[in-house]
Length: 112
Length: 111
Image 1 (tube, rainbow over the protein chains, first blue to last red):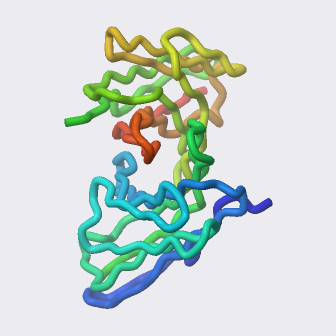
Image 2 (cartoon, each protein chain N blue to C red):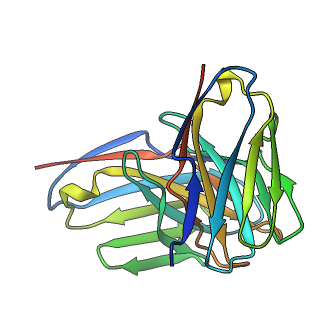
């Protein structure tokens, strides 16, 4: 039982490049979330998926797109990376109405 | 708007008790959660208050007062490994169950 996994662990991009961050969970959770965390700050919600087949914007969605591929997988895409998107990205999942979110190990992204 | 405020940093001595406060300006939430995050690590769940009052989990306790828009995390018998950042978060009372996080409190435990 791996919990929430994320790939890659670390990535360096040049401005304008695109990439997809992958997230998968094996806990049969309905809800999945993408957050970003900037140094010394809390987590800000980018996008979420309350159930398979649905996605919605969070607090800071500009510059990102998401896909809920199936119940297990939720990917985050940067179409044209900008230095302002340098951050640590965390994926999380939760089973419906439970209060606990389980986080993946994070992807550290540097955009030059 | 919605916001949660926490002290940015707290320092305490090993073996002592420390309280981390969280005040919020938000409405329509299910409960208040606390997460711990060590440097370079992922947030991990510590405690949740769905109702007013005190919840105890081992050395950690958490409290919520909706009438005062206030909650706190209490850490007892502090250990060096408790040095980490602690975040309070509210769960939005809609079908998303999304979390709104505070900016975090960095706890430094000294010997």
